[in-house]
Amino acid sequence: MSMSCPLGESPLLITDDAALNHYLADYPRESFSSLRESRGVDAASWAALDTDTTAQSYDKACRLGVPLVRLASLQPDPAAIALITPKVARQLRVLPLRVSNGVVAVAMEDPGANNVNAILDFLSRERVVPMVATPRDIRDGIARYYDQLEDRDMVRQLGLDPTARVAENSEEESRRLAAEKPVVALVNTLIAGAAARRASDIHLRPGETGTEVLYRIDDEMIPVRRLLRALHPAVVSRIKVLANMNLAEHRKPQDGRTSFTMPNGNHVDLRISVLPAVFGESVVVRLLDTMEGLWNLAQLGLTDQDRQRIEDVMSRDHGMFLATGPTGCGKSTTLYAMLLELRKQRINILTIEDPVEFHIADLQQMQVNRATGFTFATAMRNFLRHDPDVIMVGEIRDQETAEIAVESALTGHLMLSTLHTNSAATTVTRLLDLGVEAYLLRASLLAVISQRLVRLTCEHCREVEVVDPHVRETLGVGPDEVFQSGAGCSHCEGLGVHRRRAVYELMVMSPQLRSLIVPGAEADRIHQAAIEEGMVPITQAAIALARSGAISLAEAWRVRSD
Image (cartoon, rainbow, N blue to C red; front, top):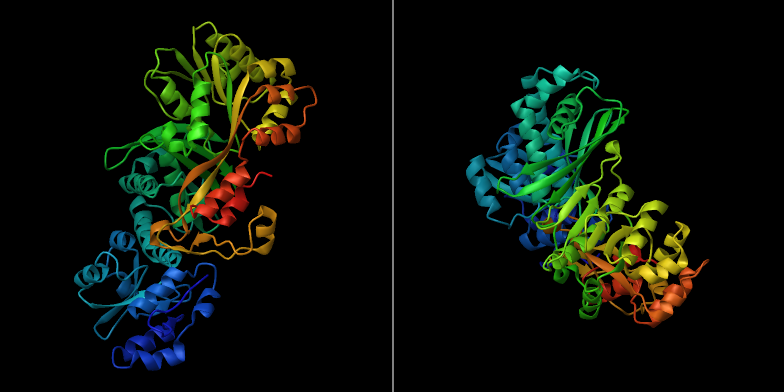
């Protein structure tokens, strides 16, 4: 972590109530210089406090000549908290701390952003004394003080016992709670907030003392607030109502789906999973933005050469194309991008998915329904009698599905599907292990794309990355090569990363590669042969992105496949 103070003087560090009171008592009579001598903090000491201390926070304090404050051991004054509303606190990302001598001390992420001081001066009717806190400190402080105030008020409105253990309410009581306006507003706020912050999932984790609400943003779990224990059943009931789940069932897993309309009119599809846990039902809500979720081929980050190769595959009237990788690596996004291109032709496209993530016009999309026996395999058997040109299967999971997929690819259909494998080459051995005959696979497989999602370094808080020598040696990068990582700032939720993109390897079948598809085939031999024919492995593709500055070398290390 590289930090410096432009003014050449270390900022003040306030870590407890006594230091805060002393600072405000002397403000502004005592000079900053004398205060710095006793309570100044250098960059190294600040960085050593914990993992949340960022270079951005230190630099802001230096540049503006204001103190740094650590909020964990501070107790904000209720009179200060009451000066602004919870909505304003969340919007401006500020936490009032103390009112003293006609001034109010306020912890902020960025005192210089969006005229925040002027806004607070007007709202509080006091002169604002700004202090810099880290983004995570601000979030945690707002959760501790503003969220709990709102929650206690909501508990009173709902007539709940704040001291009672989480109970399994009757269906009638659950339905009553789910319909209460404060509960409806809270759930809507959580969903809208997640969508606005580009979260892929909302997690509700019930605990002994309360429920932790977290957003998954760019593959990182971000705590956003903590609900009082008494509110947990009401919030879960509301989510169950949205997903048309059984309100009386608390001891079995349930899955559901619904759609949510944002304040701006955009629609977000929600996939909801509820599991029974020790302290109440655990909930995960997956958000699927119908406006942003669909990408075209140009947006996938393919090289010109690889894009041409995929277009060549799509021009075939038969054969099989597979997208592989772990869960949540963008396989479906890749296939949807191909379908968007294929639908421009006058052809019949059928899909079977579990579930249908995005609805695309001009495609016949079907969803697995295990209760009625409508599985991937049964759907594909019926597809062949439905005059398809292109078939997309959400996932090849078993021998039956794999065999029908190969059969479809050999009988005049372009087959697109996904498979869980770690590399393009291991896809071949995986299909052989599933029972597909080698000669059939040689005749049907066109290409395999294996991919991962990497987190892009935030453009607003880049700094020189400190790289472990072992990582450099293993990845084959020179000791003098410079890489960049994100320090963490308000633009990236303090994560140092902002948004994601795919990194991939594309293996297009050639006569030489087909000759290696035999019983007992070795993935390493196939992998090496593909490299000799021009395939860039995922690890090398990720290192190239790191050298360009798009991602950190640590991110390349995280997604390496060899």
